[in-house]
Length: 123
Image 1 (spheres, helix red, strand yellow):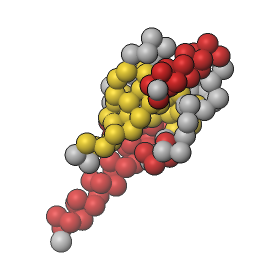
Image 2 (spheres, rainbow, N blue to C red):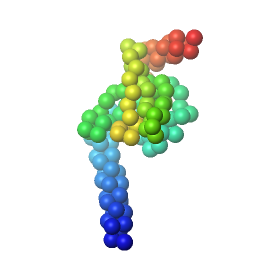
Image 3 (cartoon, rainbow, N blue to C red):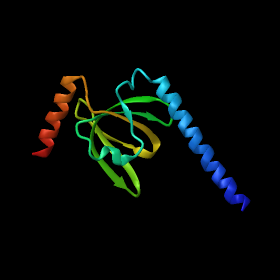
Image 4 (cartoon, rainbow, N blue to C red):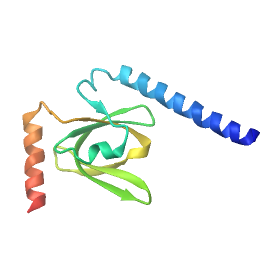
């Protein structure tokens, strides 16, 4: 019984530490993440279209990201496929990053590049 209680306490501590870490990172990058929303669950991204992703790695570094292109599930791990303004694709693991999105990108040129890429891909 003590092992089970220790296990529950360890999980609780991890959740509390994760919430505090997220809060600290949001504060650290508040200017860069202005107008961006935190993604708690991968399912939040399924219905989104033409959104821009920024993410923070487990090292605490903010990455500017790219446009959400596709979500893949491989061996119970979700990967978010992104493309940048140079039409270069890459993927990130949802479970090891804090993901943020913005559906109203203010840079019209970047949005136009993304839209043209989608048009090419869908042909």
